[in-house]
Image (cartoon, rainbow, N blue to C red; front, side, top):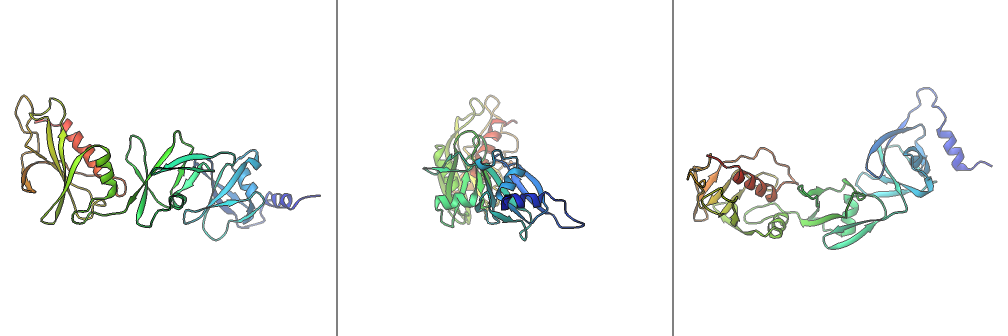
Length: 297
């Protein structure tokens, strides 16, 4: 006796007649490597999707549909899945006998799949609508996670995510992501507003050893309207810095700027690259450190 599943599988191996339509689907493995597959039948079984991705043995794998809003939907082995009507479908195929650990803020969580979407992460974290989710990436800038992003939890180590309120600096507000960065890295800072401009003053920032006549200086970063979507330009230091040994003023640092009742030395270092949603004060601090280390007359 031939099962219904076998009949369906057999029907899909038949060659299409004439100009019969074919139905594409993008299938990803646990490493999130997507590959296009084309089926002759608009309805396929979960096991057929797994077989197309070379998932063996089939009953130890699961097919997961990625919905347009980023949510996940399991497709059972003998469940029929319709490939019509929503463009090219996306499906993940992963082993079903593992669990993956990750952290959101201070909460330790597990997920039974190697891959997880931003939408699902938000649901697990029960985030309010005005909060964003960020993925911590060692040695790189944190990455803002959108609902439709898919993250591979099978990478080495425990994935870490932080939730931060979505704010744009208007007046004296500072995005929580920046506050977290500055406090977490031990910076003594204050937010100063003057004449419609907002400045972040970092106090007693250590200078490169032996580079200048001073060992520490305050650093001012002026935030433009629309920050963090719009990038800051240049930075300022006090007191005025001169190079050790020669007493010369570093190149492009001769202009004075008054802010917050103080006189600042302007360091004309322009920002030509900025990634909204990724870059922030951590980017500017890194640029300040690079500029100070490379200062010359």
